Length: 254
View 1: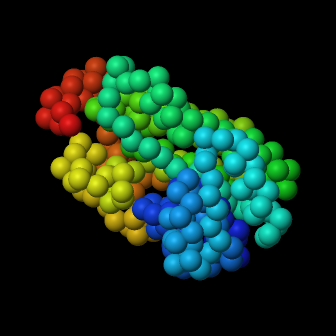
View 2: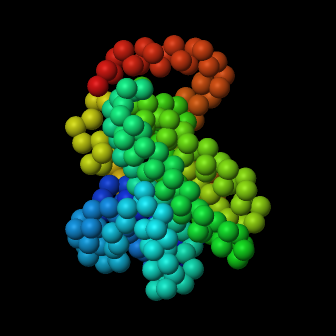
């Protein structure tokens, strides 16, 4: 899809990946860009800086996402591209609290579901539209220090696969963004963490990859191309891959 003249909505848009995408989409000709974020003050500040509308939105609440989409449609008409990008990261395994598990589930899975409930049927009816769901390389592989993140990011990939298979034949394009480490507030202080073994990307680098991949209308957006090789190793010999993950976990315990 060419972004020229398109109306785009980006959640998690008050910094990092979301703000980087907004800048890249604008540079590639999107006519209307709307950013949304849980942090109302920050999204207002970033929106003013970028010269775009900003909305406060809690993506764990279906009503908030419905209100966001309705407001954009009232202002600009049809939403051409919806980037479901909000995310959270907490360390921990099975011992993580139920609240942490639920928060990860609601942000990393249900937020995508809420947006798709509204937009996918409408996009299918008109025969065009693009849903970009942010997951992580951990959604294809794993994060060895966070079960809550890994499990729910896998869920994000699985739901994007479902959307692509269900609505792709009707003209709805679906991509899932699966980066390793990107320099954002979420990765602050984690320059030597497990996700940065192949380098820490700047948001601008990631955004350029997203634009290029959307232009080709490919499902997987892999700003770190090494991830594809790791996926192939995983499915090629699962037990060997798991042994490798165990060794990696012993090297990166925090």
